[in-house]
Image (cartoon, rainbow, N blue to C red; front, side):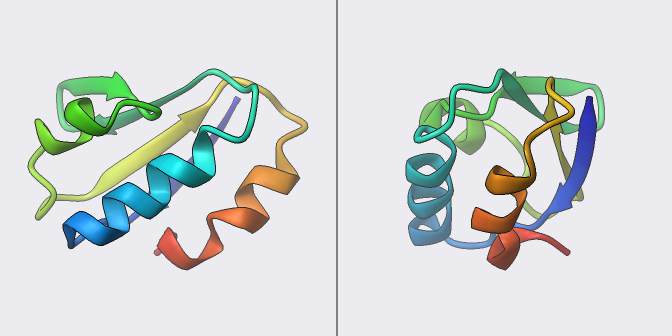
Length: 75
């Protein structure tokens, strides 16, 4: 498992992020405090407080291609 801190500020960024992660077969969640949602769910992401730190948990160790693709969203 790998964890990556990310920042999503605008609706356009959330849409681009969801489009990017949906291209990969990995299971992944977004975590903000106690709340955890599916990283591939745009509605789930909008239920989070996007002003607080968000962590992307990827349940695979060989996901460097995904991490490179979402580099613009990482902190």
